[in-house]
Amino acid sequence: RRRSNPVSVVSLPAGGWAALHPHRHPHRNAALHPDMSLRERMAAYEASLKKGAADAEAQPKVGPVDDAPPVSLKRIQSAYALSAAAVNRERMKNVVPFERAQSSSSFMEPPATEELLEVILKRVADGEISWVDLTFHNEFTKLSQKAKSDVIIRLADAGEAIETVKLNSVGLDNSNAPALAQLVRGNRKLHGLQLEGNLLTEPGLLELAEGVHGHRALSELSLASQKVALSTATISRFIDAMEATPSLISCNLGHLRDDTARRRHQAANMANVDAMRQRRNAAREANGPASPATTGPTQRRAVSFSQRRHTPGKPPPSASVSTALAEKQAKVAASIAASIRDATMVADWDAEAQRIGASQMFEYGHPSVGSPHEKLDRGIAYVATGSLLWSRASQDEQLRVIRAFGTNTTITTVVMVNVVSTGAASDAVAQAWADTLRTNSTITSLNLESNGIQSDGITALAAAVASPACGLLELRLANQRLAVSQAAEETLAEAVSTNRLLRTVTLDARSNRARELIVKTTNANIEEHRRAKRSGAAGPTAQAELSGGEASEPRTAADLRSTEIDPLATAAVVNPDAAMAAQLSRAKPAAARRPTTAGTRGRRRAEGPADAGE
Image (cartoon, rainbow, N blue to C red; front, side):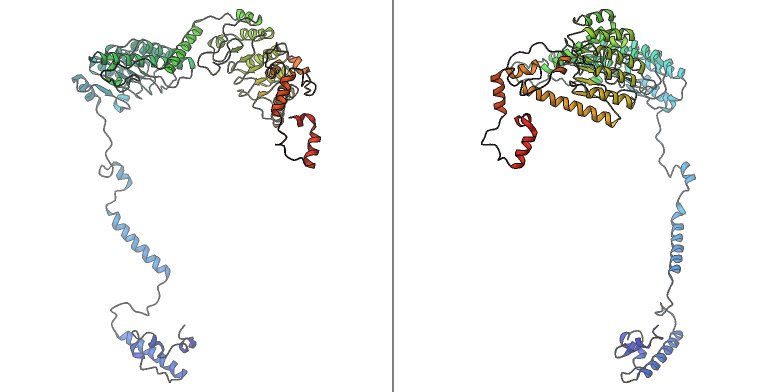
């Protein structure tokens, strides 16, 4: 480009190219002169270029040439690739291929080796170790069930030298249960036995429970995570074994879904821990050695809540438990007693239905201790939730008891949550309650949540809600196991809209119209009740609150429906002095009132005297 563009030569400063780069072309300084013309300068420049090219060819090439042809990007990339490949080949000379690396001991760390089974048994026989841990032991797991039983019997033959045995996830089944029972019965110093993650079922576990029952020193037993869930009989038998074994302070049976079994398990655990603390305190006060049942693993768990530092010259601290703990123990004991009574009692539901129909004190519907409904009044609340007796009753017996509520005049709250599982039985229960609510105006709260009520049952309850004799203030139907049709939801919502008493209705409605109608109606009923209570026309109870007297007998639902609330007409019905005092207490002082504008004056005139009075 420099040769074909003479302008670039003209733009050179004095001295030309040599002036810019004198170190590169020293021979050109004499060829150019400032007084030369443009043509002469161009000719001299061409001659200097030729001379420089001839000199460059004549000189030996000892270094890089300044005017070497440029290297393209492709050549640079190819050269870099070749050099990188060479470097990688040099680096990979000592790398072991993947196939060879799998079997090469120099490339990977050697796997952890487990101790041979015969070595472990020999050490046990020689008395070198007091604990045996065969959890996930590969050699033991691959043995046949008979060979596993032989190994367990050899551990049992070791006598009282073993204190802890762990056989988790080794494939034990019911055929190994006799050997396990022999291991427990033959070793009176065995502190811990873990059998988690095996194949033991009810027959084998019941045989093991017989060996655990009344053991002298066993303090830890773990049977969780069996391949098959523990049966109710198995759980009950092991809880019985806990109650008969004071040293057993940890019995892991996995997750207990039954509330009764869980409370029994907790109570037995607390009783054993408390007994262990008492033994330790007695041994410490006697300044003697601890009893055999309080040695070993129990030491790290036995921290007495009543242990205090004793100062010389002062009386020793009291070892009595706190009031809260005593109340909790009393509740647990009462719950266990009630559960045992329900489990062994044979209920006479015909007599129960007669007592309910005659408004007498019932026998089987009292809320259990520790349940969420414990604080309900035992005389006016009937609770079937969590009752073993109710769960064992036949469907005909349950329906007879429900229909007996039609003539009852004392019970106001009924709780039957999660008492019926199937849809047909739940619909029958809902139909029975619908027939009862058409004649009973005393029940104000009915809870039928978490059952299987279907569309027919919801429709029957809707007809009962629309009945003039229904006195419900609360109806709970949420969390049904089966889906309800949209028509049934809307039927119930329309029935609720005609009821002036219902203030709480729970239903998992999918219909937006039904849900909005229920919310709107219940909110309106709550507001109406609030206004009636303020004005003194919400019934004898509200009148007694305003007048300071006692309430008279409650009216029926039909009387409450027929009552028209008129604040102006009923202002002085209750007690004129109390009504006037209530109005004066709600009125604002004249000095605190804001100035009335035209817009405010018109709005107050449109709202009417009732709103203005509020």
